[in-house]
Length: 220
Ligand code: BG6
Ligand code: MG
Image (cartoon, rainbow, N blue to C red; front, side, top):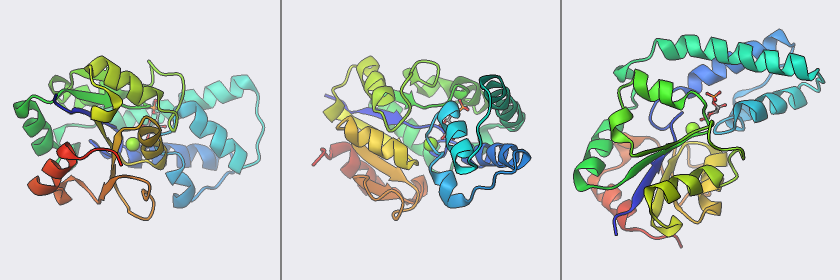
């Protein structure tokens, strides 16, 4: 039985986290709300709606539903300006090598992302052909740390959760993978992703030896 590999998108495959941050930061400033990098960690992996709710809570702001929806739209429009400029050069270092290797060996690969823009981004960076399954923000209703997105991805890949491996950069995503009882591999800072089964700063840090260890590991 081949392991099913599930990748988060933003911050794992491409560095869109910086574009999300910029767009949210500008939006928050227009509302006289300030938030810092540490708070931004809490927005990673989290849906657009949940992100805006958090920002409004930090700023102790209450707004109408109409205004809320306008702000969601405004944020996405700004974000999409950055997305439209993307190309293959934005695929994070070391990612291509692992996608190719997994494809060659015949592991089924899924995307498990909270983003409603996931397909647009995969198309921009020409990675669509690598993914057997895409579960994104249009298909799930429960935001990470709820495991729904990963459980759905594993099901569509035809693997049991214990045979699924999740690559994630977000605290909420690691928690979602752990709740789904899947092996969690954190991409980012150890101090933040301490609940992950493995953590690497980025994909270039994952040697062949590490990668094989991950493919053969099982959840404790
Ligand atoms: C996640 C990002 O992948 O997708 C979050 O980490 C983002 O920052 C979320 O808010 C939703 O993305 P989108 O593209 O639907 O606004
Ligand atoms: Mg992410």
